[in-house]
Length: 636
Image (cartoon, rainbow, N blue to C red; front, side, top):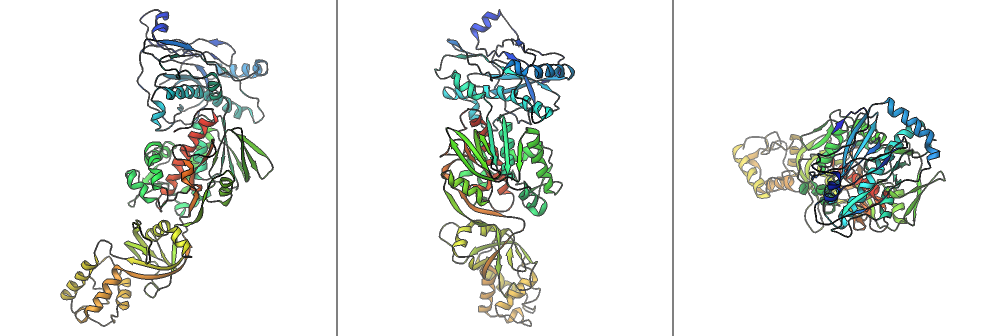
C-alpha cells in the first residue's frame, strides 16, 4: 500500500524471538542501499509466508530506491549466497548531484511504494521512495503467471528478475531526474548493493554473480516504427524495466494509420466478450498462432483495461466494434503518445532506419542520417512498409510475399447499375471457382458502391482469399447469396407460396416474399429472370420462378479489379510465423530481435481485429525485449 512518511521507514514483520533466530529459521533477503546522501541503511527482517502477490500494471516509474526486502523460507537446509549488483559510479563525480538531490528530497514529500516483483522459492519485495509523482507505479509481465511460479531453474530466473526490477527502479529515478536537469546531465547518482539469502534445496536457485550483474545493467531497446504496434511495444518495454527505449519513425507523422482508421473514429478493438476461440477465427492468417498469446499474454479484455486505465472511455457498438466514446481517433493516438511520454520513451522522427546488424549479442541500428544506435534488443514494427521487410530479410528471415487485403471489388453488372448506396444487411459473398477447403466466414452486410461491392462481406472475402485473388490478377466472378439463412429449396417453396397468395400483385413491384431484399434490387432480379413490369404473380411460369430463386441464392457477378477501402488498409503477408516465438514475439534466428504488428504474416478482417494484434504483439515484444536487454531470459 501507500504511506506518506516524513522520513524513510523500514518495514518489519512482527517478531516472536531474537533476530538471530529469525535469520536461522527463515530465508531473508537483505538489501543495503547506498542512497543519494551516500550513507548505507540496513533494512530489517521478515517472517511468515506472504500470499503470492497479484501482479499489477505499471504506469511510468519515477522513484528512488530506498529500502528493500525479504521472503520466508521453509525447509531444513538454508545457506547464504551473496550477489552484488553495483553500477560503476565514481562517488567523486556524482557528489554534487548527490548533494542537490539530498536537498530536494528534504524539500519534497516522499512516498513509500511496495512493489512485488517475484515470488516462488524466493519472495522479493522492493520498497521505494518516490519523489514528487502522483501515481504509484507497479511493473509486471502481464498475465505471464508461469514466470511467477515454479522451482529450480525458474526460481533462478525469478531472482534475476528481482535484481532487474531493483536496478530498474534506480534507473527510472535517474531518467526522470535527467529530464528535469536537461539532455546533457551526467549518469546515475545512486548505488545499489544486494545480499540474497536463498534455500539450498535446489542447486540452481541462487543466481550467478555475473547473471545478477547483467540483470542490473542499463539495458537499451530500440523500436523501429512509430505506428500502433511500435508505440505499444516501446511503452511495454519501458514498463517492463528497460532502462532506455528509443523509438525511431521514418516519417514526421507517427500513428498516422491510427488517426485515419475507422473513418477518423479508430475502431480500437473488437468486443472483448467474444470468446478467444471465436475471436481468432477472424484472422485469415495467424488464427492458430494467436490463440495462445490472446489467452495467456495479452487478450482483448487486457487491451480494453489498458486503454481505460490510460483515461480512454470506450463503447461497444451493436456489431461488436469498439470505439472511444469521443468518436475521435485522436483520443487513441493521444493515449499512446502520453503513455510513451510518461514512461520515458525517447523518439526520433523523420529518420529512416537503413539497416540492423548484430555482433556478439549487441545490435547496431543504422539510420539515414548516418548515425548508429546501439541496442541490447531491437523491435521491428514497421507495418507494411517495404523497408521493414528488407530489414527482416537481411537478418535472415523469410518474408511471405505481401499482397493487399481488405479491399472492395469493381463490379460491372446490369443488376447493380444505378444502385449505389443500396445495402443488404445479411449476405454471403464467395468466388465462383473457389479453392478447395473450408469456406471462409464471409457473411455480413454488403454495400453497393458506384464502382462495385464493398462492406464487411466483401472485405472479409478479400482478406480470406487475398492470395487466391492475387493469383487471379483480381479478375473473375463472385457469387452472392442474399438469403444465407434459407436453403435453395426453401426459397423456391417460398416463391410458390407467395404466387398462390398474391396472384394479382405485380411480380416486379413491391410484393415480394422476402422483405429484407430491397425493392430496387428485387426489381432488378425480377427483370434478370425475364419478368416484365406488368406481369402478375399468377402468370409466372415455373422456369421463371427457378431463375428468381437462383438470383436470390446464387447471383453471379463478374469483377475486374479492386479498390482500396478508405477505412481499412491491411496487407497480407510478412515475416513467416514459424520463424518467430509467439510466446515472446522474438526471432528464433536472431536472439534479441523482435517483431510486432503488421510486419508479421498476420492479418484480420475488418472490425478492430488488426489493432488487437498490434496491441498483443507490441505488449509481448516489448516485455520480452526489456528482459533480454536487462540480461534476463526471454519469456518462454
